[in-house]
Length: 442
Figure 1 (cartoon, helix red, strand yellow):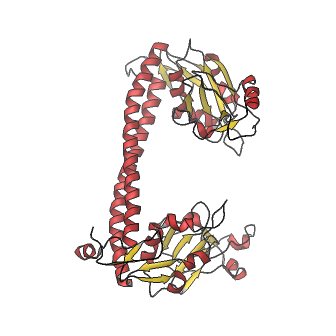
Figure 2 (cartoon, one colour):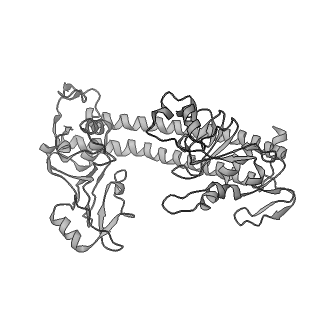
Figure 3 (tube, helix red, strand yellow):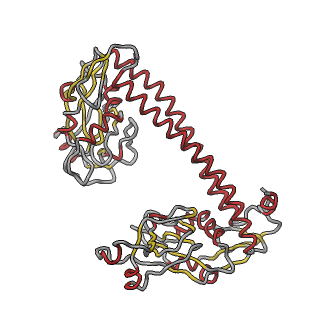
């Protein structure tokens, strides 16, 4: 892409040089209206029941054009809350704090907002779509302006004080039109790749379910398993409760010892990946606490399977070596009896979607998604002969491994496209490249 003919220093390190004829505008001087909203008293039905007026929250923001929002308030809410203002169609919204900080939306409807939204409208100087792209292209730098530690906050004052460097409004519109076309092309390409990922994931799930519950031989005689969700299984397979074919089923420590900077490793749900143990960010505890947990049976050994049982259900990893670590109660420790089970096969069986669904169906009345040791012990499992288990595991290693390699490749491609999209927006809205001729050629 070509550059502008001449540049000047913007005086801002992260913006760098800008085209010579671009001007500087403080956002507060460029817009006639900049405002926010509030949250009417949540327990008051007069403010929400049968509401007819849109009430936008930061969770609705989509970094694109927005056509509707989920929540409504009543005229009474506006009457009683002076901070609750209606903003017109065509306004731009940005999230000032929370999980969606820096996210934007260009409104195609009239709405009120909560206090986490900052709204811009009415400018003779700034094209509203250009501003949205400017925010998107410089999101990381804008968030860096936020104050506060636990929950960074881009206040209205911070946003109002941001200095924009931009061309004429006519050229801003040209730039926005160019980016509309280019980002739409990239979004279509990303969507196709995401669709491919969904198809591959469905294929992987079906492949694993078929292999661990029906086997590899499609012509083998079948019998009723006696379990509704499982259906038929190969005639020569067994079915029964997991506890009958294992030497140990327990969980980790129900006491959380104090952590320290140096010490012995202590794993929880977050440290279990896709059949891997992730030690990089695990917590560390003292030798004394570690020894207590070892004596209490919280140390897995080689060929044990660690199963996530709190929060995230049904992720599992095989312990491949006698590593020196203990685990928290959020992890189940399953020790297969190797007269019955290949540890590799049991791990594949435990993470198949049919087994995970069985686990989830047995959870009763808890706000936290959690399966008990009793549930794990009484899970119904399929038991092929050991030789067949090894054949199934080898098949899944090859077939699922190939799908995983394709998934990794496609995910990397998506990430590169997203990075390119962000970089393109940033380069264009800060004048690093000149797209005017490309706009005219369209």
